[in-house]
Image (cartoon, rainbow, N blue to C red; front, side, top):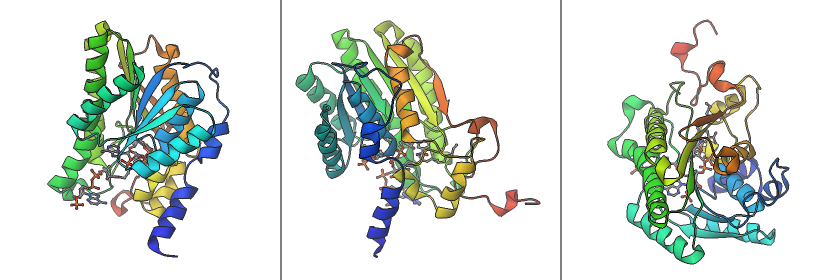
Length: 293
Ligand SMILES: CCCCCCC/C=C/C(=O)SCCNC(=O)CCNC(=O)[C@H](O)C(C)(C)COP(=O)(O)OP(=O)(O)OC[C@H]1O[C@@H](n2cnc3c(N)ncnc32)[C@H](O)[C@@H]1OP(=O)(O)O
Ligand SMILES: NC(=O)C1=CN([C@@H]2O[C@H](COP(=O)(O)OP(=O)(O)OC[C@H]3O[C@@H](n4cnc5c(N)ncnc54)[C@H](OP(=O)(O)O)[C@@H]3O)[C@@H](O)[C@H]2O)C=CC1
């Protein structure tokens, strides 16, 4: 087996498959989002894909966004086979012009956009002291700037059309000082702060903005971490197991749908209680902290 085949196999084993997402039980009513349009960035990733499936199963037309056309098209195909509505749009969220052109195209095609879920994002594990300028900028540009371009582009069109809207940003738990991902903690803290400020500034426009901070959620995104570090993630919360992308998808619907109509500027932590308990090491526990272990 070559490295690529191995990566694909590892990747396939992480998270929930499309068949599982198509049939996974949900607490929401089948027509809860009928007629609505939702944009999901990172929609072909592990968490974004679950969000896309759930919103589509609840009646929304889902636009999945990412940089890889093949991944997006394959997902849209599988969604279509299950009789739900979806389309793909290739865009790099770091490119503000591409983001603005995308929202214009979506309004032209659908005549409305109701929800934006920003699930595109990520980081690479590295000791902060060794971050290169390019690496730092890649993480900040993706997670903070890219998320902002998406939010602003969505909101400008809602304002201009006097249309209500909701935004859900998938971030990271920022209160832990998670080791080895300081760049993303900086970017996601920015998104959380920005979301609080926008919740106030955009309330008169009928736009709500909330965040979800996932704990360890098993997805193909974990492949960027070592096997040893990944093996410890289930022990990062008192439930002693990872969450699933479905846990995040149901939280996203809760915040976006009328169930969340009095919630804005909030960050919902979905981490199995991890923030209240124990130690989390995204890159494995460094010797310095082992003490008497
Ligand atoms: C509390 C609970 C516990 C939580 C546990 C888990 C914590 C979080 C988990 C997750 O979030 S998993 C899912 C997220 N998915 C990912 O993280 C995907 C993997 N990451 C990426 O795809 C990328 O890193 C990125 C951040 C999205 C950036 O992508 P982009 O395409 O914009 O940049 P690149 O061209 O890949 O790289 C640019 C630049 O960055 C530096 N760099 C990249 N990778 C590394 C690395 N592994 N080590 C060191 N430096 C890296 C480097 O300077 C790159 O430039 P070049 O060297 O390529 O010229
Ligand atoms: N899984 C976990 O344990 C946790 C995840 N999170 C966060 O949740 C979010 C989703 O994670 P998850 O689904 O697991 O990760 P994945 O890596 O599976 O998915 C991330 C998606 O983001 C897309 N993406 C990345 N950069 C860009 C870009 N510049 N423009 C457009 N799309 C982009 C990727 O698609 P493509 O490459 O095709 O562009 C990919 O599909 C991320 O922000 C992640 O950091 C937070 C805490 C824990």
